[in-house]
Length: 139
Image 1 (cartoon, rainbow, N blue to C red):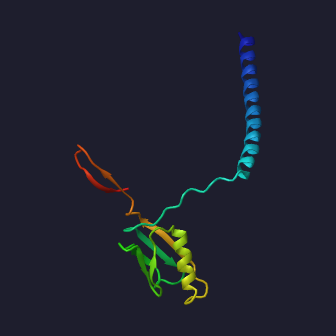
Image 2: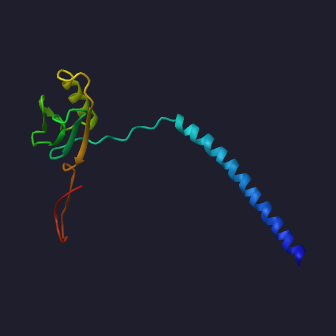
């Protein structure tokens, strides 16, 4: 009986060592695959396009008077202090940031601008047909 227990423990120890060795080998293979995956160029995800009714947070570093939330009007424009109206509809937040930053250079040395979409109110979907509550809903 003791021999069976000793053989069982020895067999269990060998199996665990083999599993550990195969795990290390698999980890090495994964590292090689991940470095190869890093070299492959991935196409960028489509960026969000600003639409009418979206709430944007425009932040200018160290300029609290120029920072704040604004709503994209029905004409597709937003109003920015010192700049007046700026077209926002159809642009990505990065494109809008770049324009605001470029136009603010006239007033501020090196402005650091951030544009964040707080509420994407322009994205809607519609429920129609024989349902309890048909209508227009924000995405």
